[in-house]
Length: 217
Image 1: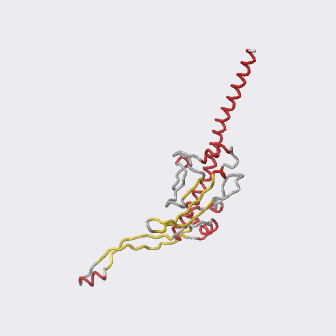
Image 2: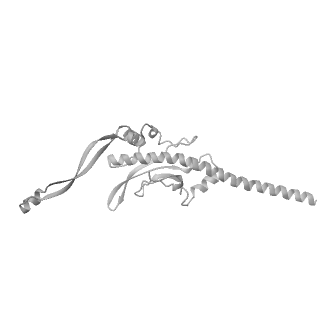
Image 3: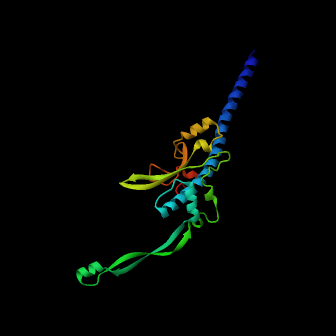
C-alpha cells in the first residue's frame, strides 16, 4: 500500500512538473513569436511615419487615406532650397533718416526638385504594401487616421497608424494575448495596440520601447 501511495505521489509530482514546465515554455515561445511579429509590424509603421511626415512637409497636413498617401509618394517632389544671408537697402529707414540705411535679410533660393519616392524609398516599392499587416494569416490592414487637435489656440495636424495586438497575435493562446494587452512597462508595448503617432497628442513617435529599435525615425 505504501508503494502504491509513493507511485501516485511521483505521478502527481510528474504531472505538476510537466504543467509547470509547459506554462513556462509556452510563455517563452509566445514572447519569441510576439517579438518577431512586432518587429515586422514596426518596419511598416516606420515607413508609414516617414511617408506621413513627407506628406505634411509638402501639403501642410497629414492624411488618413492610404491610397492618397501612395499616390503622393508616386508623384510628389521635394523642393531643394538653399538659404543665404544678404544685405539690401532699407527703403523705409532710408527715407526716415535721409541717408542710406541697410538691413540684413535671408533669401531662399530654389535649387531644384527631388522625387519623394526616390528620396524616401529609393528603388524599393514596399510603400505600396506598407498598409498591410505583414503577418502570415492575418488578413488585415493598419488603421490610419488624420486630423487636427487644438494646441495653444492653434489647430495642429496629427495622425495615428496602429494595429491591434489581437490582430498581430491572432493565433496565439488567448490568455497570453490578454496579458500582453494589459502590459504597463518601460520595456514593453503598453496597451492593446502597436502604434505610431497619436490623435490626442502632438507626437509622431511609436509606442514601442528602444529594444525594438528607434521609435522616432
